[in-house]
Length: 354
Picture 1 (spheres, rainbow, N blue to C red):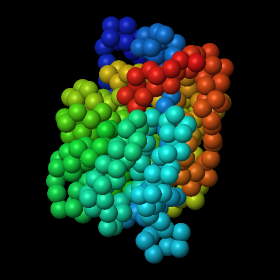
Picture 2 (cartoon, rainbow, N blue to C red):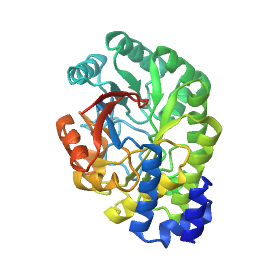
Picture 3 (cartoon, rainbow, N blue to C red):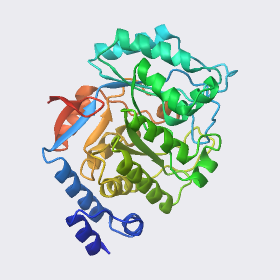
Picture 4 (cartoon, rainbow, N blue to C red):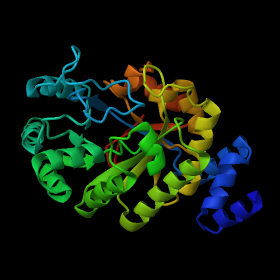
């Protein structure tokens, strides 16, 4: 099987689901890593590893979805429930700008009362005050929820948010794009087809997005493969994904519980992502969930990007995972792994090499 896979790759032929499942379940980890590393070298021959200076502002922790894997959400009546005011958000973004930041990642779950006018006003004011910052915010589930609360279509919602200043959409809420898994871990959230609908509409109106996968909860190996192929198929239709980011479920403090995926499992899925997603340029390693050492290893298993410096991050931290890293530490980590560190924009324009 490995020889057939290598032949396919040498002829630029995409893998099929059977081959991908074999790599995930039967192939040697280091052999899969070598394949992925070879593809990374072809796509990124300059030996550069990128990152963005960003901040993740969680505007509220009040969420009606109540996903079983999430340790961050609160009910509206909980004593530690919150909704940030505009001025609080502006202060956080000012701090991002003071650190030469260029990306604002803003997500907050499915709030029961916030309609589209709240977001339109916020995005307009952010764009006026901080034109150098790309508003890379919300998620497909939030877009669907805002549209429903506001009595408008998803298409109108996205178009109005874009007009107000939303520039790109992160791939949050993908979890695993198989509805049997979603029903078990996040039964109140949109199904995989609605997630795809939002992404394809965003791409249609000129917004780039990322795609993610959270694995290690209740999915099967076949589900992981299906997720990757569904992402590849969307990209084949639209070309709108800039990057793919796989990360592992963090079970602490969650209703779902269980044991976290191992570093070996993470590296295998990361490498498989690089091999399967031949039509997506960038694969992102997750130092936020894996820590600095495994992030360095990930750069030899297909990853060419380490995401953001994350001036602030609350959702993963709520599950007890609190790796932190300054821009200087991230640059050193990339260099120590044998690569050229480079700061980028949300859409992968290189701003500076180090």
